[in-house]
Length: 131
Image (tube, rainbow, N blue to C red; front, side, top):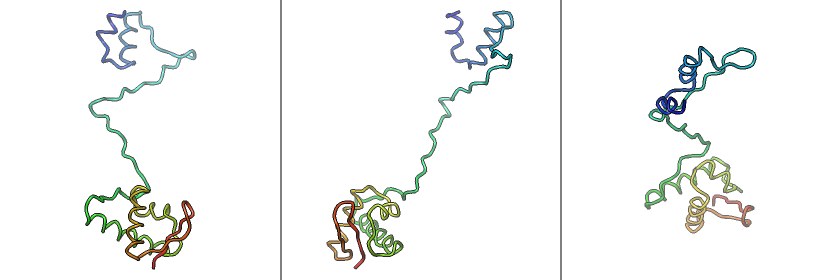
């Protein structure tokens, strides 16, 4: 029986049941109540694609160039305007503009140094406002 399994290892469970059923005199896989077992689908390795992840956050910004950082800074400023411009939490801002907490913090630091933003508070209580 082991040799038969090794010869037919590419068969699905249903196909194996048919092969063994014919060898065992028509026996099938059945539950106690006589109903046939549910079909089991094999995932095809050739056509299996991972599901695309969806997120409510914006796409990751490209901050490797001066132009990319400038564009990200401008998107941060426009997000400030859409959130009222006063006492905005970094978390709410990051949901709008995307990026990692470190990328947003670097952008906020650049904007504070450029005197375009002010801040108050510390750590999680920090709030940012437009000048």
